[in-house]
Image (cartoon, rainbow, N blue to C red; front, top):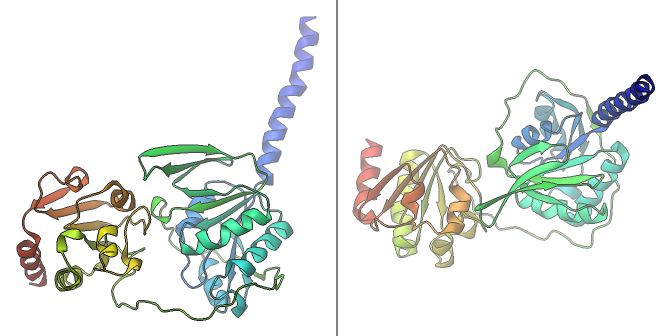
Length: 335
């Protein structure tokens, strides 16, 4: 009997190992990037799943963007849909493009940045694929388990998905941006369903600036309610940004008060940034604002209130009148 029991157990163990190896080979990921401004950190997140990685780019400049993406190590293939219909990422026709390529390629995972682009197109693709989206992840634990913040980052949630196709948006600041390698992934045409759209792009009114983009800048200076009005915001924040070579941000209070455009808002309902240097001027440090910048490498706070919550997360703090301290700092930086 003992020998019979051992002989019966061996095939089961062997079968378990075979199944594990087989399931890992079935993993395949499609990373959907915006061709006009690819978020390459999505590739770092997608690579943690394992299995082959394919990138999908769509729009008039998809072909030129594909040449850059194809150089990244780990990218097995780049799919392009070079059509002007996708230039403005209208979810109504972009989502069917994602869905058709997921079905054609048999992908188990779809990754996109947790940007305006990803937040626009991926929910509709999730609905068409009847799969629950996992949003704003900051880590990949395994092929079916992901980590994401909730409650303005005060709680970190581990989520396990049993859906056969997992659609995930990535907080770009949580993953390193890979350096281009010597890869030469093949570039192929994507399956283009040419889906009719119920919406039409009419026009856009963009704030144009020569300063670094807020979402990807290495240095950011943000102003808050303490600046009192738009005139002070412009007079104090922009010279400081120019002296540092930094992007300009703002708290929600400053945006709601009309000091700055809402495209500059940093926080839970704005942009999430993680620059090397973040300078908070006249910002008290409400929990919603901290959720958008607390991962910055070095945080400097300037506020006249020594008890302001911003000092709890700051690496360096200056308790002073910003109307005197910041202009003086700007002049010294210029020298």
